[in-house]
Image 1 (cartoon, helix red, strand yellow):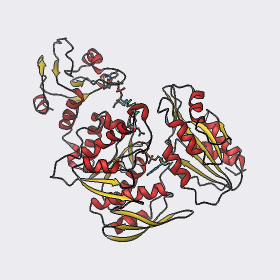
Image 2 (cartoon, protein in one colour; image 1 turned 90 degrees about the vertical axis):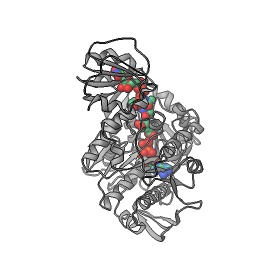
Image 3 (spheres, protein in one colour; image 1 turned 90 degrees about the horizontal axis):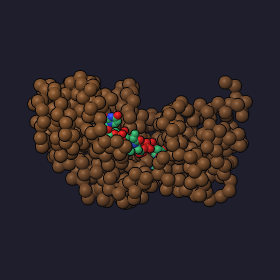
Image 4 (cartoon, protein in one colour; image 1 turned 180 degrees about the vertical axis):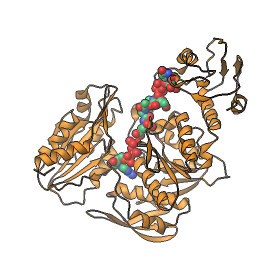
Amino acid sequence: MKTKNLLEVLQVKQIIGLLPEKIKSIQQDSRKVEEGSMFVCIKGYTVDGHNFIEEALERGATTIVVEDDPGIHVKGASIILVPNTMKALAHLANKFYNYPSKQMDVIGVTGTNGKTSVSSLINKLLEGVGRKTALSGTNGMTIAGEVTATSNTTCDILENQKLFSDVAEQGAEDVVMEVSSHGLAQGRVWGIDFNIAVFTNLTQDHLDYHQSMEQYGQTKGLLFAQLGNDTARKKFAVLNSDDPWSKKYEYITPAEVVTYGILENANFKAKQIQYLEDKTVFTLETLEGEFSVETRLLGEFNVYNVLAAIATLFVKGVHVSKAVALLRSINPLEGRMEQIPIDAPLKVYLDYAHTPDAIRSSIASVGHLQRNRLIYVAGTGGDRDKEKRPLMAQEASVADVVILTINDVRNEDPQEILRGMEKGMQHKNYGMLADRKEAIEHAVEISEPGDILIIAGKGNEQYQITGTKKEHHSDKTVVTDYIKHKYNIPI
Ligand SMILES: CC(=O)N[C@H]1[C@@H](OP(=O)(O)OP(=O)(O)OC[C@H]2O[C@@H](n3ccc(=O)[nH]c3=O)[C@H](O)[C@@H]2O)O[C@H](CO)[C@@H](O)[C@@H]1O[C@H](C)C(=O)N[C@@H](C)C(=O)N[C@H](CCC(=O)O)C(=O)O
Ligand SMILES: Nc1ncnc2c1ncn2[C@@H]1O[C@H](COP(=O)(O)OP(=O)(O)OP(=O)(O)O)[C@@H](O)[C@H]1O
């Protein structure tokens, strides 16, 4: 792209040196810089991108965008001084990739729990009505079954614009996107023109990063404020009326609000809910009348997720009856209270619960099932929110037997992590095993016919992080293999 055109979007304080005629690519990571790149220096949590200017120049950068004057003059390259490089990057990336979010409908889903579940549901329903969609989140960017792995649940500004541009080129009409609180706090979604913002819930998590629930809640609110004042496109906030934070988000968003819930008044309200062995059935009260809903997704938390998805489809112009009909054929999501299909005398579920509220939800979702004992494997991650650890164990204590373990130890002392959780245990019927494989095998070993076993923390993730090393691990494989061994099931 011509440098002159690209720079039209920037508020430039000073340009030092001669500008190149064209910019071949924009990079915020010096290690990705190539000949003709523009390198934008971002001040991060770990390091300051300004420290890598020389490396970027050596690799062929012809333009360096800075907010601190590095005091160097380099022949053949120019330095562009701006007030804030992160904001500059949002403008530059948008312009460079031709404003891809304006070419599609963008639906952002935020909340402590349920982002992956709700965005996947919305995506499947949209596909069901014939829309070409892309799904961005914890599982990468997916379009037409093709997955591009991403570095974060919510990618950085540059990666987002590049991926959006790729899927727009492939004909995507909608992008459904998980928006994490880290992503919002770090401005990773600056420059994305959202049409719909969906809120699931706000409960304790990530306080290592956000410091307080107040700050965490305010950060989530940025998505609703970011719906902006552009009235040329229809904008909606889809809010959970049973979560008190929704009132605040309703106040701060300029968009139209549609609500869903079970307890409070809502535009989409579930009543007469029946939790059955293999399905959930309820009556849905809506702006378009009453509907009978049947879904294979189990538990109350999934009723909320289904309501959020149907309300989103409604504001996209899809008749409720159509969404309700499509919902019948949607299977439970991998690793989200996913039942392991195995011919064993007990029920086994994999779940991704790694917050106190998600643990509560996962246990509640099997509350209606006949059982002997409930055995719960609860895990938490190292180098992450320590305050939630005892609260997780407290919620897990509702189970008859609890095995405390670790999801990804990262750089922490494993025993310290376990002791953190142990403080919250409410009864003595528990064990602690730092090795996740051993913990799962132990849970199976002590199981008896008629028990329910929930293995929570990693869902369908296929790895474990020790230090900075990512190694293959699958809860599903570990539990399936050991059940076959224990219950003599032929392979
Ligand atoms: C704490 C945190 O969120 N960190 C994020 C942050 O990293 P950072 O600020 O430390 O970046 P940095 O390493 O200091 O680098 C600063 C700048 O220098 C550049 N650099 C760096 C090194 C070098 O050699 N050359 C170079 O140019 C970097 O490219 C960057 O532009 O910015 C990076 C780019 O956007 C993120 O990838 C990174 O996420 C880390 C990996 C992470 O683990 N984040 C988690 C907590 C997170 O964000 N999780 C949420 C999901 C949470 C949920 O489940 O709800 C997510 O959205 O993924
Ligand atoms: N609406 C909900 N309310 C409470 N708990 C939920 C809800 N939806 C899902 N959960 C629980 O949270 C777990 C994680 O669900 P999901 O992956 O959809 O959330 P997420 O917000 O994407 O999580 P993360 O940000 O950590 O990737 C599920 O396995 C389930 O135990």
